[in-house]
Amino acid sequence: MNTAETIDTQIALPIELYQAIAQRAQVHGQSVSSEIVALLLASLVQDSAELTEEFAAWEAASDEDWLNLEAALTSQEN
Image (cartoon, rainbow, N blue to C red; front, side, top):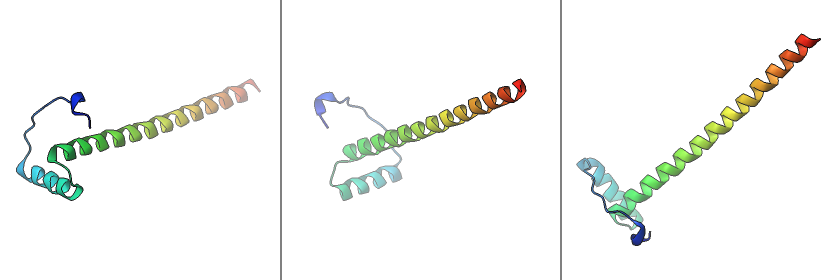
């Protein structure tokens, strides 16, 4: 992470959450701050992937709706 491109901030965490993050940070060999950033980034990436999947499903359903409408209109013409 480039510290020139960061913003200092302060958050208040419940003690249990801080301890869990500190333990993960120690396992990963990084600071608590770096672990929090890593967790937030992973969450954003996951949300982005889920949003992409949701959009693809919506698009497929929309295509199916159009095909059904086209079939219904074609059957009414005959």
